[in-house]
Amino acid sequence: MNLEEVCPFLPFKKCPACGRIWRTCADMLSDPQVELIGYQTNFVAVGEGFFLFEHKPPGCGTTFAVAAGALAELHDGPMIVNRPVAACAEYCLYRSNLLPCPSKCECEYVRTMLDVLKNWRKT
Image 1 (cartoon, rainbow, N blue to C red):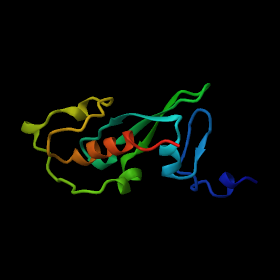
Image 2: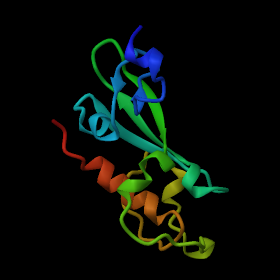
Image 3: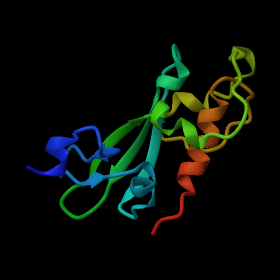
């Protein structure tokens, strides 16, 4: 019996295509074959959106999602509660837009996290 059968909750993430397992969040983010490609926003519950990654080794190339809540510990800042629609730059409407947003709204923490994830050091 292997470890994954005994403790199926142990790995942080498993590639749905090739089965590559990352034991921790840091393992996944540090992997040079994993690239952040976007964010899928959930406007009803902002914290329930998904960060999108591509696993790029030869023979895989799949896109997989990680729930924003699973990476929440990477955010070190205030959480804004209201989304002022009139002042919105609408960056969150485009899932491949990884730029920091000038708007001050409830999605700001996601934009900050995108920058952290995009610049994570690969080993």
